[in-house]
Amino acid sequence: MKIKRENMKDYYTFGSTAELTLFLGIDREVLFQRAKLRGIELNGTYTEEDLTALKPAKESALADLNIDSEAEIEILKMRLEMLESQLGFKDQQLDDRKQHIETLKSTLTKAEQNLEKTQTTVDQQQHLQMATLSQLDKVTSRVQRIEMEGDQKKHWWSKNKKDKPED
Image (cartoon, rainbow, N blue to C red; front, side):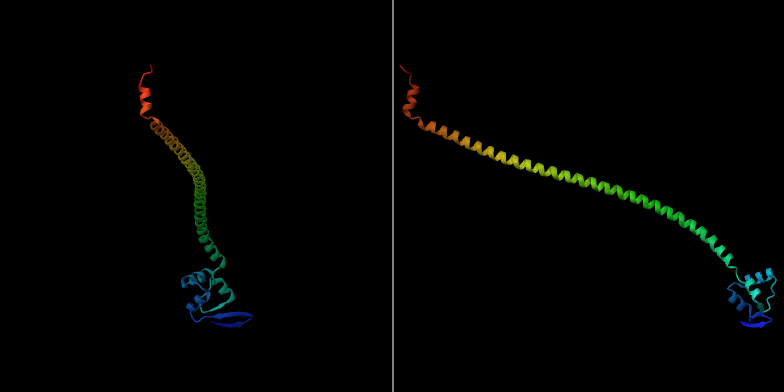
């Protein structure tokens, strides 16, 4: 590309249409369409106004981008809403599970307390049973001793007295 200044106007000269399309950043077909629409002759030399007319309008590119982006944004919004809904559901599940865990902990604590009380009661019962058995053994041995003493006191003359009728 060469620039030449004549009569206070800049003229840009391009060696080929390929060089011009590269400078403008558009396809060859688009270049021919825009030149035809705007009445610009593609002869290799162009004014600043010609080049501006042939360049892609930034606004139209942004509009195209916005149209595509809006559809994409809507899809992303829908996905976001769906994910937020799923997140809310998962949060609720977590809360329910936490509550269930707390209930189980409470039940376990009560069961442990009941087990402790039961063990204490069983221990007390065993102590009482041992004490009762000990007393029973003492009484039984005393009774046996008394019976044995009673049997030992009976001699042959004691038996006869009881057996003989009194006159």
